Image (cartoon, rainbow, N blue to C red; front, side):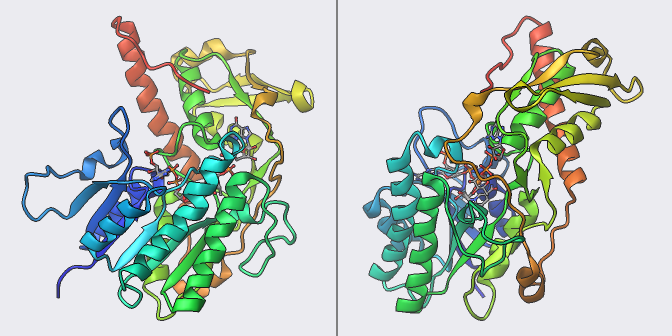
Length: 376
Ligand code: NDP
Ligand code: GDR
């Protein structure tokens, strides 16, 4: 039997990288769409990269963009995929308030463009479609925990665009019999999470602070509650949805909730620090209360008594999603899916990976080379 062929949009993103690796291990031929950028943007999949001069590659990259229908039609025609995973998106909620029209175009209409391409090319019976839907659809939550039947109330241009993507996927399933599924995924993170999402921002800052490369971590709403899991576990659920007999939508979540502040506490604890929180609202600060000399790097001792976390209102959103908690019962019962990584394991993996990066930067700095110093 010839290997299955998958096409991943957003292959250069966090989930794209984990999914590509997962599918390659399963024997798939994987095609991915990457955007042209002025710098190399394939860091997350460089370990999977195959030289274009090698014959019979099982990972092939195509230039493309979700805002370009002709490009999508041509790639899908050429690839003739058995499965399409639409992971590409302008995925940052706060940034979507700055670029609402582009977000609607890429995240909303982009989904339609792929579904239409499948139809135009007559691939309705061959190609299965996965849409990266999101817990952000629940926004101002109407029920806790959130499950597949919980009403949506989106709270950002990102979530509204994803709402279109959700319903157009359902509509094409019902109207044209497409095997199309929505995965309503709750937040999932990893060491390759984008550096401006809150978890990675925290783990990166903590690692840099203990090595003396950064002074303070500025955060927005620390009371926000999220249901965090590991991207490695969640891409397996994406694949499982397309292996079922019938297409359905599934909530994918851990079923456990923590605040942003809890995440900070867990991240600093991983490197032997404990914080004392003082003040309220925009005046809240996190001060290093104890440094465990056995666990913390030596350079971290200088942090005792220092304020290392402050609130910066620039990170507040015009409308916030205060609380999300998923109920993954349907996924467990129908897909046999369960998260394998606990919150503590996730935080630990992310912190230790960022510590390695920070150690490399520290080494560069001590040898007089420029160390990467960008954070926002
Ligand atoms: P990332 O932001 O890490 O990756 C997004 C990917 O989309 C990148 O490869 C990016 O390319 C690409 N992309 C962005 N805009 C376009 C465009 N116009 N045309 C083509 N490609 C584009 O996101 P994640 O991997 O974390 O998330 C994957 C998907 O799942 C997204 O759709 C996201 O909205 C959704 N989601 C994510 C959750 C999470 O917690 N991670 C939870 C629920 C849903 P480039 O690398 O060039 O920027
Ligand atoms: P989210 O993730 O908006 O849930 O979207 P993010 O990590 O950006 O925010 C989570 C919560 O933390 C609060 N927060 C901060 N957020 C950021 N980015 N930076 C800060 O400094 C900060 N301080 C506090 C936020 O206000 C929010 O409440 C992610 C994305 O991956 C989406 O694409 C995906 O659909 C959802 O998860 C599920």
